[in-house]
Image 1 (cartoon, helix red, strand yellow):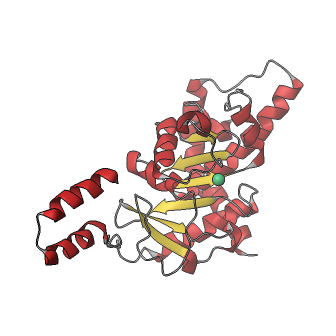
Image 2: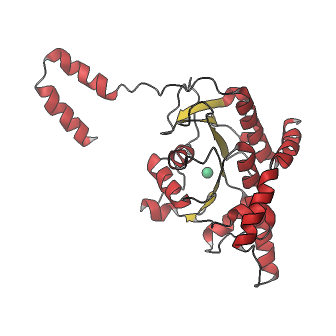
Image 3: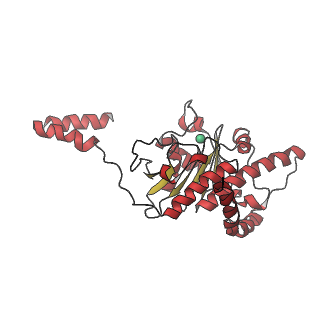
Length: 272
Ligand SMILES: [Zn+2]
């Protein structure tokens, strides 16, 4: 900012008075990002359903959010305005560019942590949908150094490893624990790397996938695996996890059937 200001001053000093007024406008009057156009109504409907399902399944409560990449432009994504997921309707869905700037806010407030979504979409072209939650069973694995590992076939997608994002280490300071800046979003995306899920110390987790049904599936079964793993570890110090080859085969098999629970969960959540 300082450098921009100095350049502006030096440049403006050599300009005529009328140009002096025009320079700041050109530099600072940012037009909102352009829209990718109306999203497919089916995609919006699925995004609303994803919000309701995640609430119904106990993955999100008054907090947490789910997004999907815009079908017409991979540089745009869709996310509800700041609202409890269970209350989200089609009219609450906002379009963002990958800097997480709203295309047409119309007075609506966005989630503080929307940068989680934009910064992951920037670096992971394979990711089409993202869930951020504070689902409770996952939290202990972010604060103990005990790795979250797949112990049954439904959570085989955890096999690539589940890294932990430590906001204090990444930012070098005490924060309010929220990923409220693009820089923190970038650091989180870096920690996620090429994996499917990342934990956030003392906060929650993020699941990614190639579709809304799949990311909902991963959000649900990340929570279930965490609960089962804590139970297994309480029973025995000798827990057998999926072998990487078992995980690869299970992921291929179960991953092809996500439409089954999706249809069930959708009917239950939307019927309320
Ligand atoms: Zn959060």
